[in-house]
Length: 331
Ligand SMILES: [Zn+2]
Image (tube, rainbow, N blue to C red):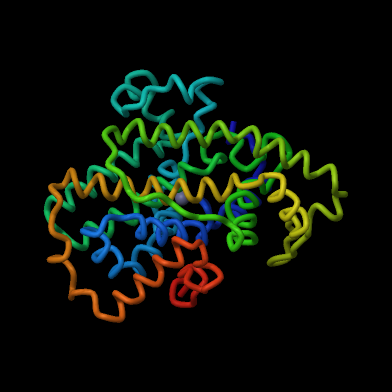
């Protein structure tokens, strides 16, 4: 079906997907919050590497440009397999590959199964007490888990392109949170051990997919208050005109969505923390303090304490403690 989309539409979608998967802003916020949810034995090491984990939260999206294997790792068009497939699809890769051709699975996305691959690698990195590998896989794993939280990452109609709602993808996961995150209540719970990580990531996919009809419906609802002239803005880039949702439209759409985007963002941070923690436990609970370049300095300890205080009060944005909005995190 995707092949039938005209080249022009592909070009437009490609443009709107430059920051595919929560947008760079969303991924960075999620990883910052995930660190606060970790237990004490993990927090020093993760906090000392906070800049890395926040900046590298977007590396899998950047990799998409050079690695043809990368794209399917970020989504699963689960409705391709049937209306109820999200509930009936085999959870394990082995069982899924027995039921469907591997080429088909790869074509329509493998995010839940790739999360399991990354989870194994992170667990091994903990087992081997390899600080570089722990950070590398923690960053990648967090990205894919956050992507699985986006409703439009669970459908063939991933940009609203099949229902004449082009650009919906970046509206939902980038424009809306970038405009409104300051008002979000983002208090992710403390990390808990996951007995069944496979079911946990599938539950994320199922919850995302359940929200998908509303994502389309509320766009139609918002449209009732706009004319084509006020709904979109036309931007000319490199001699080409492109249409984007206007700020006013994004505002109205966000109003109708209510807390949905914030809830998916908060859940992303919780599930990322849970997976990091579970990998550490399964990896034999190595002493991470020994892997730190140096102990947390007095200033670092003070900063962590202040950040956690803001996190608990939900004032990280107001107190300008969000790394995604600071210069170094965007360099
Ligand atoms: Zn992504």
